[in-house]
Image (cartoon, rainbow, N blue to C red; front, side):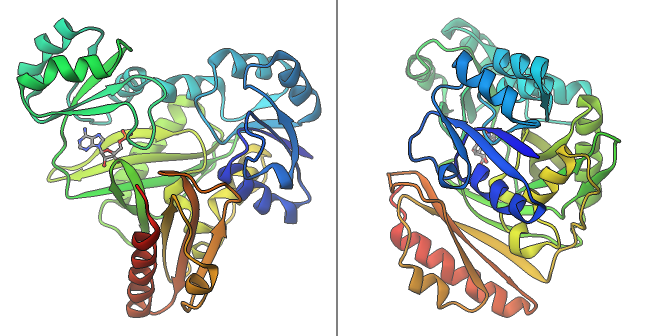
Length: 364
Ligand code: AMP
């Protein structure tokens, strides 16, 4: 079986690494010559909407999936007319547009921050008395890792903030005063069978994920599972999904979802009986899903911009290093390290040491 992946970065790389034991082959479409998965797969080198390359991908791949959701909707549509595409183009369309996504959450009764559509400065000025300060103005499309976002602290900020969006369709959201950020990762098969991972607690800085930790027996697990089940069923979704949530006094409110394997689930490679990558492949191939049980305590730290020397990471007991074969560049996720162990104190100590190493090399 050959799996086609739109995007050939680290997520495709980790999918390929999880797929080799299952005898799978991979073909990626990516515009970058040095994308992280290219030496593990056949590489179609070009733009996501290159008709000739898409035709080759459709012909060669038994199933096509994504590691990158911002591909044009017509690409997913074209591919699904020629081969099996999971998750379906509908999930992609909703996840690509923050306004459709927030409306979708509301349709299935999942609470979010208060939000409003903003297409010009007058819209922004009209809705702000209702939304209140602080708030965040976000581009509807192509936003990730905090890109295309501006914080609004008072009415004086509005003209400058709107100007910085360069006229792109946007939404404004009330600022959620959360106590924790968590995500739930789940996998669903075409038959409807779902496997849930334990919640992951996520720490961001500058809009970029830095640290994730598995939360076993979390009091909010049931609520998160309920939300993600509604999402999966309404979309008739196949594959792994990640739902990002804020914890507030009343429980959980949704921020966004990613229709793919997710950075907050990288700890599942060593920390779960079956990783999110393997379960994504199992789901899209309609194979039985593997156990999502956590093996002891598990967490992950991202290395951004630069990677510390491998010796320093690997000298830490129970630490594992994952290099993405990407050129170091400011603000770029170039590697992560995870820690998994049975002793909670040792786990906490090693995780902190990894955070210290990341802080020494982080350039963002
Ligand atoms: P996003 O690109 O929407 O995932 O946002 C990146 C990060 O910005 C989130 O993980 C939060 O840390 C923060 N953030 C985004 N939206 C909000 C919000 N409405 N209230 C508070 N923090 C937010």
